[in-house]
Each structure stands twice: as structure tokens, then as C-alpha cells.
Amino acid sequence: MSETPSTFSGYYKSTYQGKTALTARPPWDIGEPQTPFVEIQKAGLIKGEVLDAGCGNGEISLFLAAEGHHVTGIDIAEGAIARRTAGGGAEALATFAVRRALDLSAYESRFETVVDCGCSTPCPRRRRRYAAELHRATSPGPVPTCSR
Image 1 (cartoon, one colour):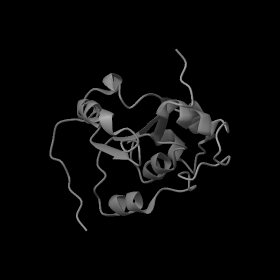
Image 2: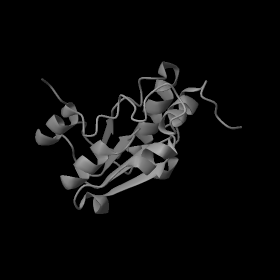
Image 3: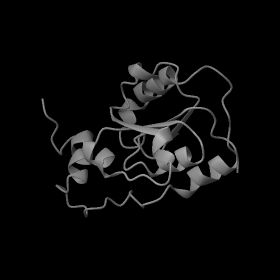
Image 4: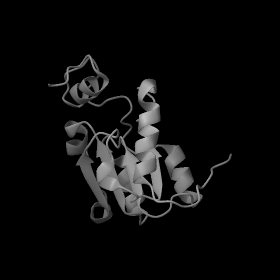
């Protein structure tokens, strides 16, 4: 069954194909990592191998890879992954996959840090399942906290 733009994932995929009312560049694609992710990296809160869930074009993934982290960026939209561009030598430390965040079985206990910039917000009824998948994909250990 193919997804239509009436579903969240169908709409998101269609956006990256230029098939929605949004411009060729979706409004959430700002061309650089969002400031809070830069700040938490500078604060030393990003540790070990990183999962960027819903990575879009990969700006956060590539930023963290340029900072020395091994990063896996996943997104349901093939068009988002295809649009990403590498900066410097970050490409060697960042890998990307077209994958649903609701099935992370291939990444069992692999990541120490997960970053998410909007992947959990669009679908509140699936948050519990999403949280369980993130738990599955993270390695056991202390959970860092961020306070302002």
C-alpha cells in the first residue's frame, strides 16, 4: 500500500518531492543545524554514537559528525536524504538511511545519544511506541540532562 499525502509520512515525503503547497525548501529546513543542538554539543552533552531521528536533509547529523561523532541519520523521506550535502570531512562519520523511526530493531542498543528535531511532535498517538523504539536503540547507561 503506498502512502498518500493525506497521511503524515505521505505528506512529508511529498513535500521533499515538491508536491505540496510548501516551497521547494520546506520551512523546517533552515540550511544549518538548529541553535539548541549546537549549544548542547558545545555543552558536552552529546556522547558516543548518535542517532539523528527524522534527520531531514542532515544538517544536524553533518554538524555532529564534523564535531567528531559517529552519527546515523534516519528519515522516512527519500527526498530528504537525497538532498543532504556534506561539509568538510563529516561524510566519513555520518551515515544516512531511509527508515521509519517506529522500527529501530536494526539498531538494538547501538546509540548513546539521540537527537530529534520534530520527529516526535507530528504524531502524538505514536509517541509511546516511538519512545520504546528509541529505548531499544540506545545503550544502557546514565542519561545526561540539559538545564538552562
